[in-house]
Image (cartoon, rainbow, N blue to C red; front, side, top):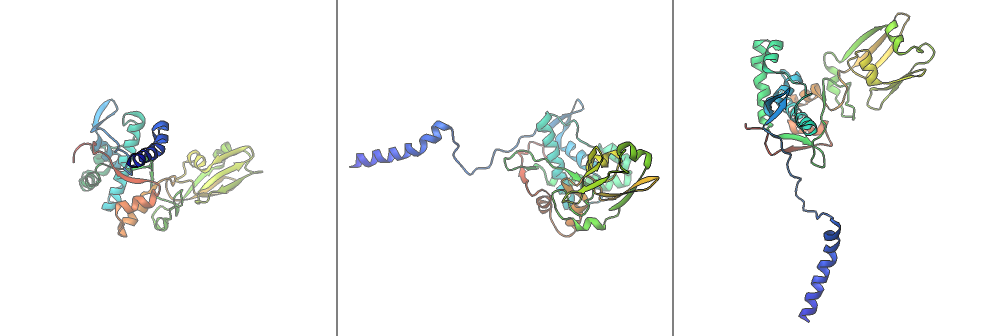
Length: 285
């Protein structure tokens, strides 16, 4: 009888394990994916640069001078994520917008550099090794922009952005330049808005451009605009600054002022991302 039960137990075990062993179906272990590995130095411009310095340079390029400490930390995580993304894609740090300490000092002046640069260094240090990843544990595509038009491209509400200086702006384009892009505007011209509030497309006769393309053609501050045309010019009235993709830097700073920490800020602007620590191969604190 004992032999029978032993045989039955073995048969049952093999019955359930056979598909896994033969077909390669993974067994759910509940363990997190292995951490991303990023070297202590990354090649940029033909020279090896400390990864921490590259992250700091990317943060400085965002021009977040005088921001709240939690907003700076949120931006530092995004900067680290951008560095990690670039490294994973190309094996180097080329193509990342950065500033060196000397460039920052020349642009900001000695006094303000001495005030702001240490704050950014602290933000990089205090978020060391943290990046945004997707559900599969790979690096998340994280972007920032200056100021939303009241919400981001994915619909994150940013009502305080509407109170910011520079929220509304006007760009006047001479009619000759406007006609060069939209030659049939007089007989056919329509603007379609996306749900987020930006312009989705502008159509004029056979010409059809996205709001982002119009933004680039006429150097507009954002793709959220209205346009009025007279006999001499096309006037664009714009809201916000930037393409609206990712995190509003102004909005992040306002949330920090209200008491949100950097993790809460990142979760709000990147709801599909996860905050993950790498193996801290980014150097040492």
